Length: 321
Image 1: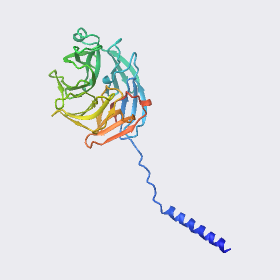
Image 2: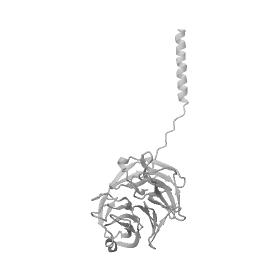
Image 3: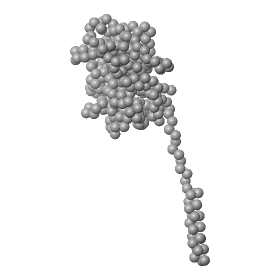
Image 4: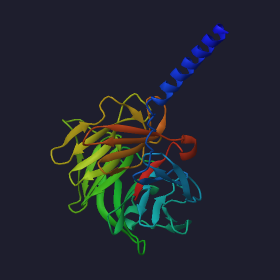
């Protein structure tokens, strides 16, 4: 009997000890819920339109731009109010402006007739980029099969009647990747260098940094005096690094130093919002998602996305508040 009592006492003490530990344990603080500050609009060359959360990466398909013959040209993606304007990469039926209405989710087209001064002097001229200046589209026209002797022309397109005007500006870069418009200057990134085109004085000059050409893509306006861009990295397929270019003193500052990523497609612009340069990229570890780089603090964040859903050649065309 004494042995049994001792066993019961030991069991009771053990049970009490466990209960005391449980009651005095530190409660686990739940992870804060991730929410989105805003969403952005993304479009692919296949015409797929997505709304993507900036922090959660939540992706929702919200539309489809219908094309007739070929893929859509990423440097021509232009979001204006309730519409998206773009061009097909078609030499068979060139210069058809594709217009997507985000409210009705319908696609219409408009044949663009180039000025006679361009159509009579260029071989198979194609509109290769579009940028909105607040009242009309500014377009760069190049030849379907350009050579080193070929020049590109710049025109304006009236969105009320789709009439075109030759702005009488020639540029000679072949591989244009993106454009940005600041005041009356059109900035053009190419694989050969970065150009500044004054649409008023009709002058073209190459912007360099310490005498070095700037081969880049994904132009985005930071301010009236600064551009965000992705500079190409030699030896890496579509490899890029983020930079800030000061238009006042022509200095180039690398952001997120040492980190090389890749873009799914070398062409197309991007956006700069709330101090952050936003892009869709592949990391060095081959993960696809949103790159968010704060250009004030130099802090970088990455939100992984499913590239099978979004598409690797997607670009960001606008911010949705």
